[in-house]
Image (cartoon, rainbow, N blue to C red; front, side):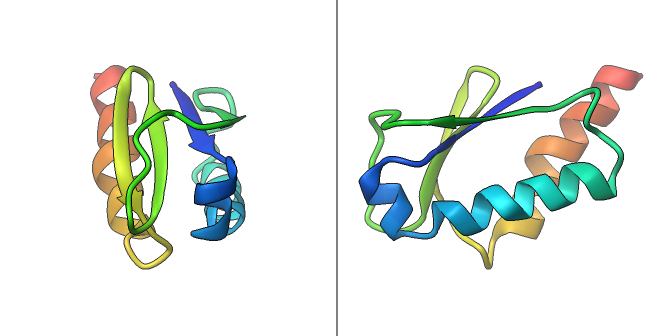
Length: 86
């Protein structure tokens, strides 16, 4: 799985650097470094008024925030990893 986190100026101002750290910590915590590649990306082209834009494999998500990180990681990352393992 490849997770691209926008670090362009707009997303940076909305906290992308904090989300990068949260993703790094979560990947390490769940021992997923063999299954997930984290990539910084400049503008993905879906700027949103709130939160950061990121892409999980081929799907783009907008408006991801620190407060919503845990739910996002559980629903969009862990669920996919578990499905791939099955």
